Length: 69
Image 1 (cartoon, rainbow, N blue to C red):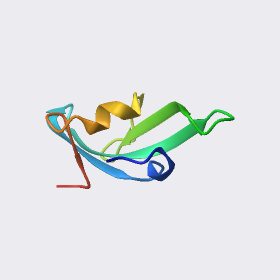
Image 2: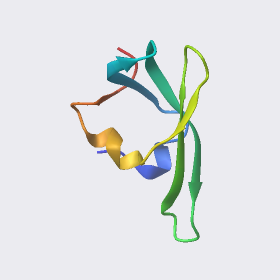
Image 3: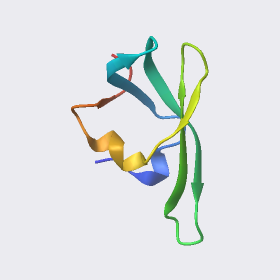
Image 4: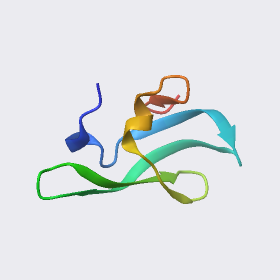
């Protein structure tokens, strides 16, 4: 279970590597007035590329693993 409140700076490993980008961390999370995530920005460690992501995609264990592996 992923808590939206603990997303910021959490580390993730993408199982299918693109552009040598395997390890990521959550660089920015924006919440609305009710505490719901409205923006989540993930950043590649290797080159600092940033991508908008639907944070719920991180629950898909076929794509993402929590931590750096």
